[in-house]
Image (cartoon, rainbow, N blue to C red; front, side):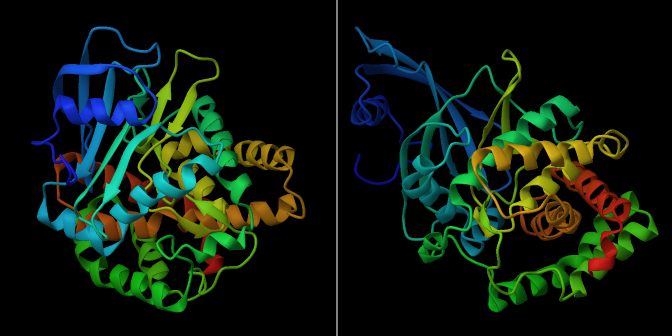
Length: 356
Protein backbone atom coordinates (compact mmCIF):
# COMPACT_ATOMS: atom_id res chain seq x y z
CA UNK A 1 0.00 0.00 0.00
CA UNK A 2 1.73 3.19 -1.18
CA UNK A 3 -1.08 5.78 -0.96
CA UNK A 4 -2.54 7.18 2.25
CA UNK A 5 -4.84 4.54 3.72
CA UNK A 6 -8.58 4.95 4.22
CA UNK A 7 -10.69 3.16 6.83
CA UNK A 8 -11.47 0.59 4.14
CA UNK A 9 -7.90 -0.07 3.04
CA UNK A 10 -6.00 -0.37 6.33
CA UNK A 11 -4.79 -3.95 6.61
CA UNK A 12 -2.56 -6.10 8.81
CA UNK A 13 0.47 -5.79 6.57
CA UNK A 14 0.30 -1.99 6.62
CA UNK A 15 -0.09 -1.88 10.42
CA UNK A 16 2.88 -4.23 10.77
CA UNK A 17 4.94 -1.99 8.48
CA UNK A 18 4.25 1.11 10.59
CA UNK A 19 5.08 -0.63 13.85
CA UNK A 20 8.32 -2.07 12.47
CA UNK A 21 9.29 1.32 11.03
CA UNK A 22 8.97 2.75 14.55
CA UNK A 23 11.24 0.13 16.08
CA UNK A 24 8.57 -2.25 17.34
CA UNK A 25 9.07 -5.90 16.53
CA UNK A 26 6.05 -8.03 15.75
CA UNK A 27 3.68 -9.08 12.99
CA UNK A 28 0.02 -8.11 13.11
CA UNK A 29 -1.91 -11.21 12.10
CA UNK A 30 -5.39 -9.67 12.33
CA UNK A 31 -7.27 -6.82 13.98
CA UNK A 32 -10.73 -5.60 14.86
CA UNK A 33 -11.76 -2.11 13.80
CA UNK A 34 -14.35 0.01 15.62
CA UNK A 35 -15.29 3.66 15.19
CA UNK A 36 -14.79 5.71 18.37
CA UNK A 37 -15.36 9.29 19.47
CA UNK A 38 -17.62 12.03 18.16
CA UNK A 39 -15.22 14.33 16.31
CA UNK A 40 -16.68 17.17 14.27
CA UNK A 41 -13.88 17.43 11.67
CA UNK A 42 -12.20 14.02 11.79
CA UNK A 43 -13.29 10.47 12.49
CA UNK A 44 -11.37 7.92 14.53
CA UNK A 45 -11.16 4.15 14.63
CA UNK A 46 -9.66 1.83 17.24
CA UNK A 47 -7.63 -1.11 15.94
CA UNK A 48 -7.47 -4.02 18.38
CA UNK A 49 -4.33 -5.89 17.34
CA UNK A 50 -3.56 -9.62 17.39
CA UNK A 51 0.02 -10.67 16.72
CA UNK A 52 1.45 -13.78 15.09
CA UNK A 53 4.31 -15.25 17.14
CA UNK A 54 6.45 -13.13 19.42
CA UNK A 55 6.53 -9.34 19.61
CA UNK A 56 8.58 -6.80 21.54
CA UNK A 57 7.43 -5.80 25.01
CA UNK A 58 6.41 -2.32 23.82
CA UNK A 59 4.16 -3.63 21.06
CA UNK A 60 0.76 -1.94 21.48
CA UNK A 61 -2.39 -4.01 21.81
CA UNK A 62 -4.45 -1.28 20.18
CA UNK A 63 -3.98 1.85 18.07
CA UNK A 64 -6.11 4.78 16.94
CA UNK A 65 -6.45 5.72 13.29
CA UNK A 66 -7.67 9.21 12.46
CA UNK A 67 -9.14 10.21 9.09
CA UNK A 68 -11.12 13.13 7.66
CA UNK A 69 -14.83 13.23 8.45
CA UNK A 70 -17.13 11.45 6.04
CA UNK A 71 -19.34 14.57 5.97
CA UNK A 72 -18.59 16.78 2.92
CA UNK A 73 -19.19 20.06 4.80
CA UNK A 74 -16.87 19.04 7.63
CA UNK A 75 -14.20 17.94 5.15
CA UNK A 76 -14.43 21.28 3.34
CA UNK A 77 -14.15 23.13 6.67
CA UNK A 78 -11.07 21.08 7.61
CA UNK A 79 -9.37 22.15 4.39
CA UNK A 80 -10.50 25.79 4.59
CA UNK A 81 -9.26 26.24 8.15
CA UNK A 82 -6.13 24.10 7.52
CA UNK A 83 -7.20 21.75 10.33
CA UNK A 84 -5.92 18.62 8.58
CA UNK A 85 -2.62 20.21 7.55
CA UNK A 86 -2.00 21.62 11.02
CA UNK A 87 -2.57 18.36 12.84
CA UNK A 88 -0.40 16.26 10.54
CA UNK A 89 2.34 18.93 10.59
CA UNK A 90 2.18 19.09 14.38
CA UNK A 91 3.08 15.41 14.64
CA UNK A 92 5.68 15.64 11.87
CA UNK A 93 7.51 18.78 13.01
CA UNK A 94 6.66 19.98 16.52
CA UNK A 95 5.58 17.18 18.84
CA UNK A 96 9.08 16.08 19.87
CA UNK A 97 10.04 19.63 20.91
CA UNK A 98 7.35 19.82 23.61
CA UNK A 99 6.85 18.31 27.05
CA UNK A 100 3.03 18.38 27.12
CA UNK A 101 1.60 14.85 27.13
CA UNK A 102 0.61 13.80 23.59
CA UNK A 103 0.00 10.37 22.06
CA UNK A 104 2.88 8.65 20.31
CA UNK A 105 2.51 8.96 16.56
CA UNK A 106 3.32 5.99 14.28
CA UNK A 107 2.20 7.53 10.97
CA UNK A 108 1.31 11.04 9.83
CA UNK A 109 0.77 11.88 6.17
CA UNK A 110 -1.37 14.25 4.12
CA UNK A 111 -1.92 15.06 0.45
CA UNK A 112 -1.49 18.81 0.01
CA UNK A 113 -3.73 20.55 2.54
CA UNK A 114 -6.20 17.66 2.62
CA UNK A 115 -8.79 16.40 3.01
CA UNK A 116 -6.90 13.18 2.34
CA UNK A 117 -4.79 12.40 5.43
CA UNK A 118 -4.23 9.80 8.10
CA UNK A 119 -2.73 9.65 11.58
CA UNK A 120 -1.89 6.43 13.39
CA UNK A 121 -1.64 7.16 17.10
CA UNK A 122 -1.08 5.54 20.46
CA UNK A 123 -4.28 4.34 22.12
CA UNK A 124 -4.27 5.93 25.56
CA UNK A 125 -6.68 3.55 27.29
CA UNK A 126 -7.51 3.44 30.21
CA UNK A 127 -7.56 7.18 29.70
CA UNK A 128 -11.04 8.37 28.81
CA UNK A 129 -12.22 11.38 26.85
CA UNK A 130 -13.24 14.27 29.06
CA UNK A 131 -16.92 15.16 29.24
CA UNK A 132 -17.47 18.62 27.82
CA UNK A 133 -21.16 18.56 28.65
CA UNK A 134 -20.87 17.78 32.35
CA UNK A 135 -17.61 19.62 32.94
CA UNK A 136 -14.90 18.67 35.43
CA UNK A 137 -13.89 19.37 39.00
CA UNK A 138 -11.10 21.66 40.18
CA UNK A 139 -8.60 18.81 40.54
CA UNK A 140 -8.92 17.76 36.89
CA UNK A 141 -8.81 21.43 35.87
CA UNK A 142 -5.58 21.96 37.80
CA UNK A 143 -3.94 18.91 36.19
CA UNK A 144 -5.02 20.11 32.73
CA UNK A 145 -3.79 23.66 33.30
CA UNK A 146 -0.39 22.43 34.49
CA UNK A 147 -0.02 20.38 31.29
CA UNK A 148 -0.29 23.58 29.26
CA UNK A 149 3.09 24.70 30.60
CA UNK A 150 4.61 21.86 28.56
CA UNK A 151 3.18 23.49 25.43
CA UNK A 152 3.72 27.15 26.25
CA UNK A 153 7.07 26.99 28.04
CA UNK A 154 9.18 25.32 25.30
CA UNK A 155 7.77 27.68 22.65
CA UNK A 156 7.73 30.91 24.70
CA UNK A 157 8.41 33.89 22.41
CA UNK A 158 10.22 31.62 19.90
CA UNK A 159 10.17 33.70 16.71
CA UNK A 160 11.55 30.82 14.63
CA UNK A 161 8.12 29.21 14.84
CA UNK A 162 6.67 32.09 12.83
CA UNK A 163 8.63 30.76 9.85
CA UNK A 164 6.35 27.70 9.66
CA UNK A 165 3.83 28.78 7.02
CA UNK A 166 1.26 26.16 7.97
CA UNK A 167 1.23 27.25 11.62
CA UNK A 168 -0.11 30.72 10.99
CA UNK A 169 0.49 33.93 12.92
CA UNK A 170 -1.91 36.77 13.74
CA UNK A 171 -2.17 39.16 10.79
CA UNK A 172 -4.75 41.68 9.54
CA UNK A 173 -5.90 39.45 6.69
CA UNK A 174 -6.48 36.45 8.96
CA UNK A 175 -8.23 38.62 11.56
CA UNK A 176 -10.50 40.06 8.86
CA UNK A 177 -11.31 36.58 7.56
CA UNK A 178 -12.29 35.31 11.02
CA UNK A 179 -14.30 38.47 11.71
CA UNK A 180 -16.11 38.08 8.41
CA UNK A 181 -16.88 34.43 9.08
CA UNK A 182 -18.06 35.25 12.59
CA UNK A 183 -20.40 38.03 11.53
CA UNK A 184 -21.64 36.02 8.56
CA UNK A 185 -22.75 33.01 10.62
CA UNK A 186 -23.82 34.93 13.76
CA UNK A 187 -27.51 35.38 12.78
CA UNK A 188 -27.87 31.66 12.15
CA UNK A 189 -25.99 30.87 15.33
CA UNK A 190 -28.29 33.03 17.46
CA UNK A 191 -31.32 31.54 15.75
CA UNK A 192 -30.15 28.03 16.59
CA UNK A 193 -28.71 28.62 20.06
CA UNK A 194 -30.25 31.86 21.32
CA UNK A 195 -32.78 29.94 23.39
CA UNK A 196 -29.93 28.90 25.73
CA UNK A 197 -28.72 32.48 26.27
CA UNK A 198 -30.15 35.49 28.05
CA UNK A 199 -30.13 38.88 26.34
CA UNK A 200 -26.94 40.02 28.07
CA UNK A 201 -25.13 36.94 26.79
CA UNK A 202 -26.44 37.39 23.26
CA UNK A 203 -25.38 41.04 23.33
CA UNK A 204 -21.76 40.32 24.30
CA UNK A 205 -21.50 37.53 21.70
CA UNK A 206 -22.70 40.00 19.06
CA UNK A 207 -20.44 42.80 20.36
CA UNK A 208 -17.39 40.58 20.08
CA UNK A 209 -18.05 40.12 16.38
CA UNK A 210 -17.83 43.83 15.62
CA UNK A 211 -14.98 44.72 18.00
CA UNK A 212 -11.58 45.60 16.54
CA UNK A 213 -9.83 45.62 19.91
CA UNK A 214 -9.55 41.92 20.76
CA UNK A 215 -8.28 40.19 17.62
CA UNK A 216 -4.49 40.54 17.33
CA UNK A 217 -3.45 41.99 13.95
CA UNK A 218 0.16 40.96 14.58
CA UNK A 219 2.20 38.68 16.80
CA UNK A 220 2.95 40.45 20.09
CA UNK A 221 4.76 39.26 23.20
CA UNK A 222 4.19 37.22 25.18
CA UNK A 223 3.31 34.52 22.67
CA UNK A 224 3.73 30.79 22.39
CA UNK A 225 2.24 27.83 20.63
CA UNK A 226 -1.43 27.60 21.57
CA UNK A 227 -3.74 24.64 21.12
CA UNK A 228 -6.82 26.88 20.52
CA UNK A 229 -9.31 24.07 21.26
CA UNK A 230 -7.97 22.89 24.62
CA UNK A 231 -11.15 21.57 26.22
CA UNK A 232 -12.34 18.38 27.87
CA UNK A 233 -13.50 16.66 24.67
CA UNK A 234 -9.93 16.99 23.38
CA UNK A 235 -8.26 15.59 26.48
CA UNK A 236 -7.80 11.98 27.52
CA UNK A 237 -7.90 11.65 31.29
CA UNK A 238 -6.43 8.70 33.18
CA UNK A 239 -7.87 8.83 36.69
CA UNK A 240 -6.05 5.69 37.82
CA UNK A 241 -3.04 7.90 38.58
CA UNK A 242 -2.76 10.59 41.24
CA UNK A 243 -2.98 13.29 40.13
CA UNK A 244 -4.86 12.29 37.00
CA UNK A 245 -2.75 12.05 33.84
CA UNK A 246 -3.92 14.43 31.12
CA UNK A 247 -3.02 13.90 27.45
CA UNK A 248 -3.92 16.44 24.78
CA UNK A 249 -5.20 15.33 21.37
CA UNK A 250 -6.82 17.00 18.34
CA UNK A 251 -4.06 19.40 17.32
CA UNK A 252 -6.07 20.68 14.37
CA UNK A 253 -6.08 24.36 15.29
CA UNK A 254 -2.60 24.91 16.74
CA UNK A 255 -1.15 28.35 16.07
CA UNK A 256 0.84 31.14 17.73
CA UNK A 257 -0.77 33.59 20.13
CA UNK A 258 -1.13 34.68 23.73
CA UNK A 259 -0.69 31.62 25.98
CA UNK A 260 -3.54 32.66 28.26
CA UNK A 261 -5.88 31.95 25.34
CA UNK A 262 -5.65 28.23 26.19
CA UNK A 263 -5.99 28.80 29.93
CA UNK A 264 -9.08 30.99 29.72
CA UNK A 265 -10.69 28.80 27.08
CA UNK A 266 -10.23 25.64 29.13
CA UNK A 267 -11.44 27.10 32.42
CA UNK A 268 -14.41 28.84 30.81
CA UNK A 269 -15.51 25.73 28.91
CA UNK A 270 -14.57 23.02 31.37
CA UNK A 271 -16.01 24.26 34.66
CA UNK A 272 -19.61 25.05 35.39
CA UNK A 273 -19.89 28.75 36.30
CA UNK A 274 -20.81 28.02 39.90
CA UNK A 275 -17.76 25.73 40.20
CA UNK A 276 -15.45 28.08 38.31
CA UNK A 277 -16.01 31.32 40.22
CA UNK A 278 -14.51 30.31 43.60
CA UNK A 279 -11.42 28.57 42.15
CA UNK A 280 -10.42 30.33 38.94
CA UNK A 281 -7.95 32.83 40.40
CA UNK A 282 -6.21 29.98 42.24
CA UNK A 283 -6.10 27.96 39.01
CA UNK A 284 -4.56 30.86 37.11
CA UNK A 285 -2.02 31.36 39.90
CA UNK A 286 -1.15 27.64 39.76
CA UNK A 287 -0.54 27.93 36.03
CA UNK A 288 1.53 31.09 36.53
CA UNK A 289 3.66 29.55 39.28
CA UNK A 290 4.28 26.46 37.11
CA UNK A 291 5.29 28.70 34.21
CA UNK A 292 7.74 30.60 36.41
CA UNK A 293 9.12 27.30 37.72
CA UNK A 294 9.71 26.24 34.10
CA UNK A 295 12.02 29.23 33.78
CA UNK A 296 9.89 31.94 32.19
CA UNK A 297 10.59 35.46 33.46
CA UNK A 298 9.51 39.02 32.71
CA UNK A 299 5.79 38.27 32.88
CA UNK A 300 4.12 39.79 35.94
CA UNK A 301 1.10 38.08 37.47
CA UNK A 302 -0.98 41.25 37.07
CA UNK A 303 -0.32 41.09 33.31
CA UNK A 304 -1.10 37.39 33.32
CA UNK A 305 -4.44 38.03 35.05
CA UNK A 306 -5.40 40.77 32.61
CA UNK A 307 -4.53 38.49 29.68
CA UNK A 308 -6.68 35.83 31.33
CA UNK A 309 -9.65 38.20 31.51
CA UNK A 310 -9.24 38.97 27.81
CA UNK A 311 -9.00 35.24 27.10
CA UNK A 312 -12.58 34.74 28.23
CA UNK A 313 -13.42 35.59 24.60
CA UNK A 314 -11.27 32.74 23.27
CA UNK A 315 -14.24 30.41 23.03
CA UNK A 316 -16.42 32.81 21.08
CA UNK A 317 -15.04 32.24 17.54
CA UNK A 318 -14.58 28.51 18.10
CA UNK A 319 -18.17 28.16 19.31
CA UNK A 320 -19.91 30.49 16.86
CA UNK A 321 -18.00 29.70 13.67
CA UNK A 322 -17.36 25.99 14.12
CA UNK A 323 -20.93 25.23 15.18
CA UNK A 324 -22.25 26.60 11.89
CA UNK A 325 -19.67 25.06 9.56
CA UNK A 326 -19.42 21.44 10.68
CA UNK A 327 -21.94 18.64 10.38
CA UNK A 328 -24.89 19.28 12.70
CA UNK A 329 -25.54 16.53 15.25
CA UNK A 330 -27.69 16.43 18.42
CA UNK A 331 -24.62 16.08 20.65
CA UNK A 332 -22.80 18.79 18.73
CA UNK A 333 -25.71 21.20 19.19
CA UNK A 334 -25.83 20.42 22.90
CA UNK A 335 -22.08 20.94 23.23
CA UNK A 336 -22.04 24.25 21.33
CA UNK A 337 -25.07 25.49 23.27
CA UNK A 338 -23.32 24.78 26.58
CA UNK A 339 -20.07 26.35 25.37
CA UNK A 340 -21.88 29.52 24.25
CA UNK A 341 -23.53 29.78 27.66
CA UNK A 342 -20.33 29.15 29.66
CA UNK A 343 -17.99 31.34 27.61
CA UNK A 344 -20.36 34.31 27.48
CA UNK A 345 -21.08 34.02 31.20
CA UNK A 346 -17.34 33.82 31.85
CA UNK A 347 -16.73 37.08 29.98
CA UNK A 348 -19.57 38.78 31.79
CA UNK A 349 -18.41 37.54 35.21
CA UNK A 350 -14.95 39.06 34.69
CA UNK A 351 -16.26 42.27 33.14
CA UNK A 352 -14.27 41.53 29.98
CA UNK A 353 -16.67 43.62 27.94
CA UNK A 354 -14.53 46.64 28.80
CA UNK A 355 -11.87 45.30 26.40
CA UNK A 356 -14.25 45.38 23.46
